[in-house]
Image (tube, rainbow, N blue to C red; front, side, top):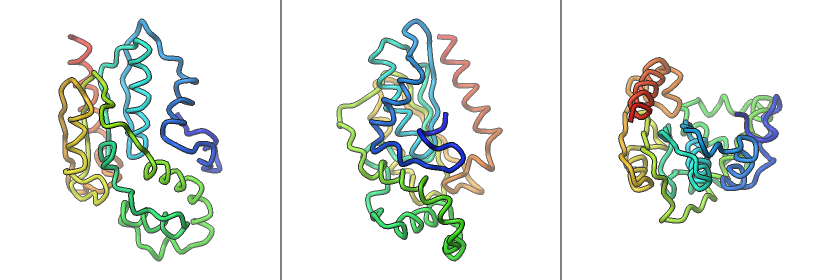
Length: 200
């Protein structure tokens, strides 16, 4: 699912918070009370998936599992120091991806991605109640070279479920977008876990 207003111009300005975006997603998906669902979210999408899963459960929908990727747990997202300036956002991208900062100096490229990057402020401002949890298993994935979603920030996802928690670390390369290099392994792991959960 694309974020509201994303389309071809990468405009994420249509929402102001993770909670607001979760409400919009639920309006589109209409939680089925008599069926089972599962969610996967990468980076900011992991926090969004958590909020959507909470709303689905509140509606009576059973969630097989929540898969969170390259994201610190709520309160540990790792974007606290992002400034309001465009420069601060570009520096955050350089930190996450390892992209040469000089590449981000290209004004045309920056103009294309900055509207999307402003969605990072929604992460920095995400204020999740400490008691907020889901009752489904949470499975976390992250790269060992990710300076944003480090192991100590991913581990507290265990506190956000009343069910089991597990985590897998990807290596070589293990940066913030590790999934680009490990997609078959990631998908295989998700499929195996879902097959096991659905057999319960």
